[in-house]
Length: 127
Image (cartoon, rainbow, N blue to C red; front, side):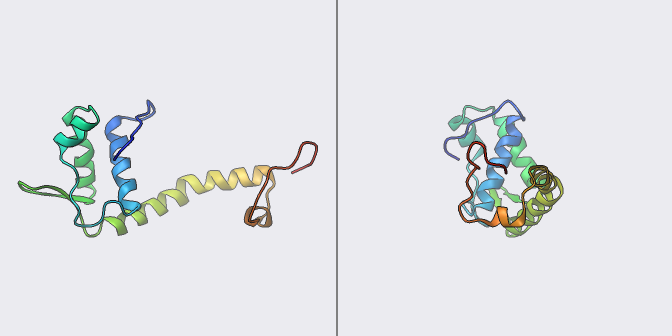
């Protein structure tokens, strides 16, 4: 989780959770892997341990990680499948409609979108 930049747009616990989710989707954290301890993350990123605990608790509530008594939090076996399914659904419901709206607004065709080296039109040329 190196180089995290916190934004003002969302609570830090949510940003931390999203960072862990991204690491799972990218395969950096795999099923069975241990998450860094709450204390370790809190110290490394100068966060309140309660903030880290809240992020980890949300991951546990979604069954993406499991608490192993005395050992810490571990990525569950079904985490990757669940995440991919959830992220695909969220993309199709929330992000894709906005992308489609923009494509239509710009009058782009499928041919335009699939060009290997799309370049912006030069000054004076139409889109």
